[in-house]
Length: 151
Image (cartoon, rainbow, N blue to C red):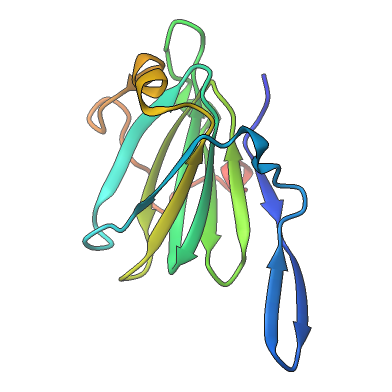
């Protein structure tokens, strides 16, 4: 199974400012994108995933904690394999999440904006969607993770 991974930007600095380039982020398969701006830092949006659809997350402003959990072909989640990722606009990284994962996220700063890219149109995404409640798989706050689980 492919794993979620960070795609780092190359930063070029000069007197005009900074240019970030994601040369390893191939946009050919992107079909749609959307932006999420949580009302506050207490809101957790979790757990949504897909069997086949791939997603890419980018913190356009502020920062986010993103957690991923693999799912098997029947949709059963293995929360013991949970990973945590911190995305920051200052860090200029894209998190690539392949199919076969649940994801959830929480803004770490006020006025944060998360851009999400997808390789499925909305109808195909809905047909591939799996959701599990926060009651079934509770969110684990920063600092309560085993360090081996943090990315």
